[in-house]
Image (tube, rainbow, N blue to C red; front, top):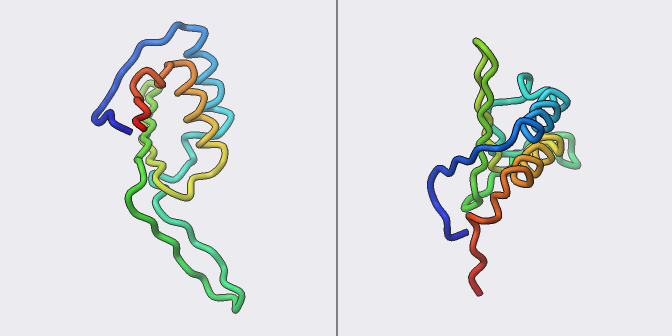
Length: 102
């Protein structure tokens, strides 16, 4: 990805409602604040931690009245969070910020 930094974009009310519905569906307010490692159970029953480096960070911030939450997806996020990220990318047409270099 060649684009760095914070990008913002306004979306129409119908798209916002779609994103907000998905946010509630995935129970965003109950998600962990960070997904940056994965804990797995090894064959011998012990737990191991997988950590990776050099991946893009994806942050989602939502606010509703007095509530505000920010969630980082770096590695090991649940499928529902990645579905929310994809929906946000789709309605905001974030592909215009990404340039594929060959």
